[in-house]
Image (cartoon, rainbow, N blue to C red):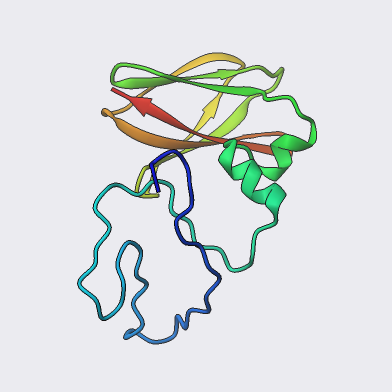
Length: 142
């Protein structure tokens, strides 16, 4: 792995979530003194195997719904102690903003045009629902 988006090891496993002694290990090996020396970004666990298209959509920071019409209505703009969300639509949308750990920070109605959201410096995940579509993306406040 060279940090350029290569997958070192990916596998499908069954996890018994009804007991507490089964730990999920990411970046280490059970019964060995090996730990990943680096950073991990955007770790996800699904209850199914993803198709190549779903993986591609995630890589491109799109959801299956937003890729249907091939036209993004939302643009995320990084800022200093804030982020801006450009909504290119005639209707309002609903923003769900999460921190990098996946905790919901806020839910807010956003209007067409440029919307400024004041946040602490950090990395955020924005889910914007416009009509029946949801667009997602990462955005940084510095």
